[in-house]
Length: 275
Ligand code: C2E
Ligand code: CA
Ligand code: CA
Ligand code: CA
View (spheres, rainbow, N blue to C red):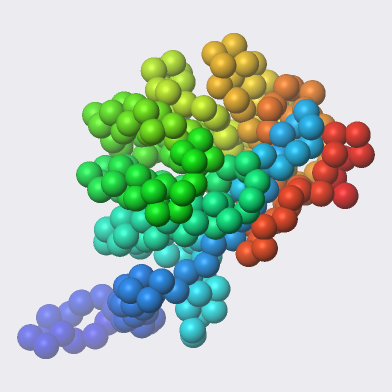
């Protein structure tokens, strides 16, 4: 313990002040990065099971900090959500991703993650419309990924926003399905184009019968209600084969392709499997 200025004792753990100072530095540096646009986007292929074709890419942001190097999103997205910077950062990712995709010269879509805070922002629609207009990307080549947590946190406005996106022709995917407040009402009531089944189910399906049962049920449900399903985090041939057998429409994961600053189609064909 250490004596406070007025003689009061307060508990002090070594490293606490340093951690607080680093958190302040991180926030200040992130603000600066936003002003200079010091971010890069890695693209990870999404493949269709039936043809083995890369149908699109997910945009995954990285912060390119001069001192820290390439900072992964888990280290700054939560901070940007807490201080509201995510709205401007999200706008940056949207416009960059649309611009990049417009230059691919293919019909592949780009999937962009939108957080709960962005979803609650009245500026989101303007950012989407602006990114499409500035890039010339056809709306059907943009997919917005929302988590269940974001949907629940914005229950009142989410119907409107999704209807607005649909009117534009933008597709909507539910991300990390199965990890949040999974509600069948969402699948019934919201205009969704894709369900991305969380990696945790894919990775444990071979060892955990309950995970396998959830995978089977969700792919079946997707078929029945006309929403495409995608298995996330596919790392092995076995997982890929399982998802195909279950009738999953698409897959994404390290086996098929890692996020990369170069856009590369997945090295995979239904006949020969992943390279
Ligand atoms: P996510 O949306 O679920 O994205 C998938 C994450 O899983 C990515 O991590 C990706 O690199 C990783 N991944 C893909 N395939 C595999 C695999 O086979 N095995 C394993 N172990 N991991 C795999 P990343 O790029 O570090 O992103 C983490 C999270 O950060 C994302 O999770 C997303 O929630 C968030 N994020 C990334 N970019 C953005 C963004 O532009 N905006 C917002 N709001 N969030 C973002
Ligand atoms: Ca995602
Ligand atoms: Ca995901
Ligand atoms: Ca995730």
